[in-house]
Amino acid sequence: VGSVYDSSVKKPQTPPQSQDEAFEQLGQGKIPAIKPIWLKESLPKAKWTEKTALSWLSVQFKVYGKTLDEVLPKLTKEQAEQFVNNINSRIEITLDLDRDDIVF
Image (cartoon, rainbow, N blue to C red; front, side, top):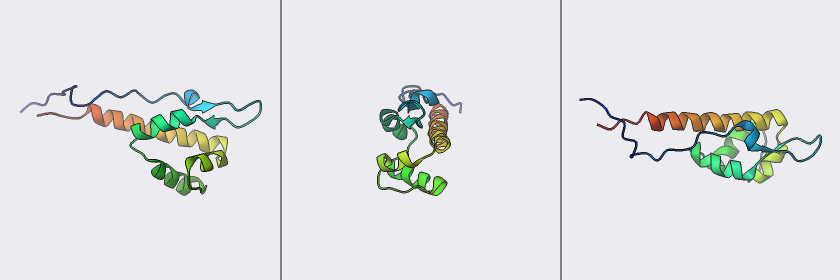
C-alpha cells in the first residue's frame, strides 16, 4: 500500500515570520518589544496557549506574571530573542509535521 499526501486534508499554514517582524522598536536605545499581534498570531501556529508560553518563560528565565503583557517587559533583549526563536522553531516543526501527514 503506497502513501499519498492529500493537500486538502490540512490547510496550509504560513511559515514563521522573521525575527525582525516579531519586534517593534520602542525608541532610540530602548530594548525592542515583541509585537503583540505577532505573538497572538504565532502562539496558535506553534500549538501553544498563553499559559504554555508563561510556563516556558518562568522555567527558562525565572520571570513571573499572570499575563504575557506583564511578563514580556521583564525580558532582556537576549531573552526576548530566544523566546521568539523558540516560537518560530515550534512553528517550523508543526509545519513539517503537517507536511508529513500520510493518507492511506
